[in-house]
Amino acid sequence: MGGAWHAPSGDSLPGVRYLSPEWLDAAGAALAADDALAAALAGVTLTVEQAVDGTPDGTVRWHVAIEDGKVALTPGPAARPDVRFTTTYPVAAAVARGDASAQRRSSRAGCASAATCRY
Image (tube, rainbow, N blue to C red; front, side, top):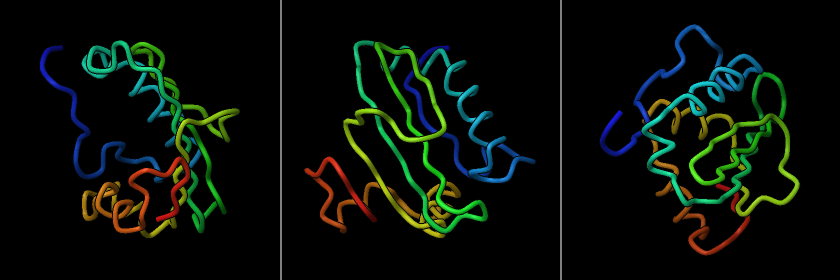
């Protein structure tokens, strides 16, 4: 695959309930299999943890670890995340649908230079 990687808009995992264990598995498989994403992240080492409060399953927490282009999404907290985001289910769902911007919401919340952000 060539070109820059970009996230798809809308329902990227149709038929799978957002933030369910099946969604986390499917999202992880999609990230790991994306050659364009791996190429775009070559040389990058970063671990991002995300927590979403108020989902149908309670708080859902996962992390994405990037190591020189290899991307792994793992349910649960990270041992030592570089950045941690926490948000509510309505906000996370709006971002996932493309109705809201995580960057704008986190900037408004004062997260521009923080390692831990709640938006």
